[in-house]
Length: 329
Image (cartoon, rainbow, N blue to C red; front, side, top):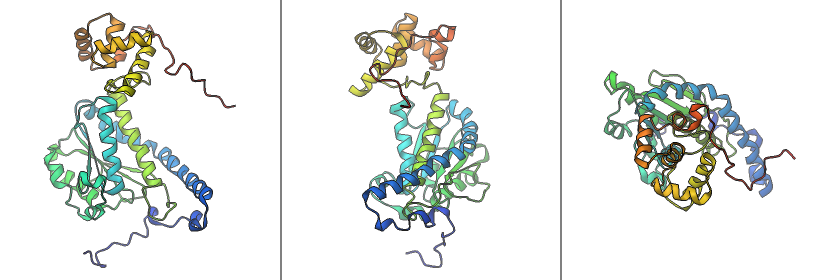
């Protein structure tokens, strides 16, 4: 059991302070609770927008190595760890990126995704074994996630990366936090999301968690765009492995090729469910194997293969033809 003397006072941390706008939370009805939470949630979006330059610098720093094959490792405890694991686990099905390119490490292991094990976050050495097993290199990036910026598990992991590994193998390190923290030599990039005091004092699964999720979305999606996993604003590396994805894949192909829905389904079947392969087969009039060879020769980037790359824009149809245009009215 932790002694009182060894328990740090975190009352100065902004995410632990009381929110003067929600002092009467216990007296509110349902409608008022919803309004109060919605009102506060706006601060999460504002916090991310204010930190866009820091997010940009981090992505720009890790992009060259990531595109060359490096990895991005998220590490956190509690809600922060769960958000990192979530983003890492969603990247392979969304972008067909190899498993292990984006990794989520959470204090307490995968069991902590369902069962609370927040006590594990107090161990500054808790992540060392998992990090060592990854055989980190200078091409990798390790991004700690800690809303209050004080989690020993996370800070210890970043220190490990910069002090326990050979200098030539030390990854780029970063920290996402929701309060001001002092720079340290173990952290190359600090992304501060100033979300302020929570609706419910100290409950950083709320505004801090929302801002963190938004930031992780930005980081991973931007990397995938830069890697060529996106064409125009289409999820072209999706693979039609279930009914929903099959429908989405067909609609993407309709947009890129102008073929009918049935023709796109047939094209997908001939391309083993791969949208990219199917698009190249149709646009270049080649076989599946020839399309795969073209993709391999152009780093999987459709913008270097499809007609638009020759100055001829592809046929473009709306993904949702029956849906009216957005209107301010």
